[in-house]
Image (cartoon, rainbow, N blue to C red; front, side):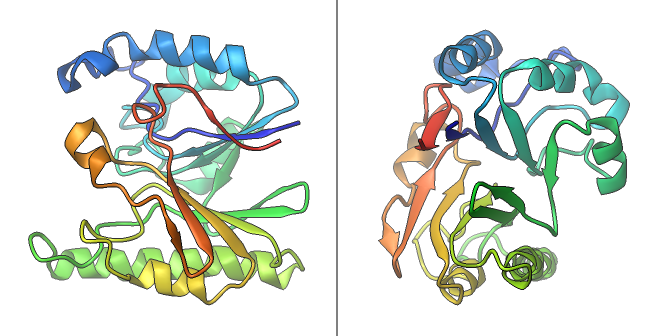
Length: 232
């Protein structure tokens, strides 16, 4: 019973949309992803999916891709990404897919580990961060705190993995509201995030230890579309 992670599935069968324009690694990426997933993940495993799950804009449009995902081995723990417009209601997505766990203002318990998280947003930077960004950024910091507090409040604050869709810091790897908040919870050991695609963006990733917390990129193209084993 292992724990895996892979973000940015960008499933597009339901919308007849591909990721081909993003270059060779994304050609037929759904086929590669599905085959790799079946080769490494068993039914007793759990897979964390930190956002950008499919291209659908409304929940009914997501049905084909969500059924594909639901049919893959393992328990899926899903987090909203910036392209997951179909996830417009927590109650609706939970009711539609009760076999999957939707992480938003809550936490998921994997053995004795609390999986907490939020989508995140652009972090303050020198190039593109305005008042509207600040508002969303503040809200996402609050949602991460709600998730973390919910784990602590129920006695599961000693061993936490945080998942986010956006990187929890800017391109200069400066401290952010997310990293400062994470540092306040001694139980957080690892942070997994996605969103970064392409050589240039991936080369700018942060994969180091910061204040005793390990940060790791798990976007699909960075992992060559193979779910990454996080824990045995």
